[in-house]
Length: 267
Image 1: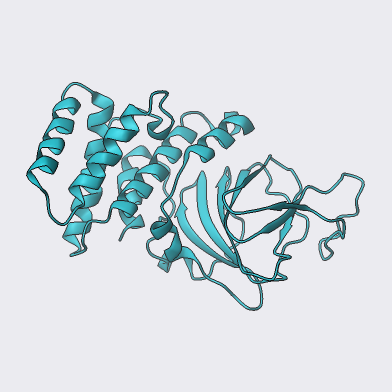
Image 2: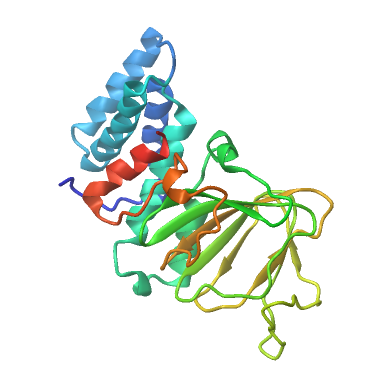
């Protein structure tokens, strides 16, 4: 079983660890290395001999790159760094039982999770009848997915039980609202009071059992990135069957399986 250091790779106070890991990934995924690049790799590896945390994350990067090579793919920097970022989030959210993770901690960790555009673009999809949801990553505690919204598509007021949720506007403009407690929340009716507008790169977080609703009231397509921590989605309204939707990761919550999860992400 691999040692789990629970290192907050992308939330380090001095960011030096993250800088070294991302620079290593950039160097080793290049099609050709200059002598200066090779020297830089050697220097980073020399630091890892005396730093267990750095060594741990470099090993994770190497495993992802080796897996890409074994499938005949060219190692891809964006895929590797995004996979490590998700792995970092998953580890740090599971340090304690899910019900002990506070809303503030969840929001902070999600805010630190930066995923590359080329990594996310492969998960964008649309449906003319309803919004289209596509899984990126899923364990028993954490689900990450993209939703594509055509103009006019939206949800009714709902909550996600004991799960914490975050919605990042990837492309377009989202209308979002937390209904007042005195509003009627009929399941087939969206309250008409205007919501708050969120533009690209803005984040909204939803607490446990907090009602909310969202819509694309603009004339352009909307794409949102979702992080759900707690219980998995209670339905299977995915764009494809999640068990067949590579490179999504399916159902695992043990540390020894985390490596395989990240491998599935880039399969």
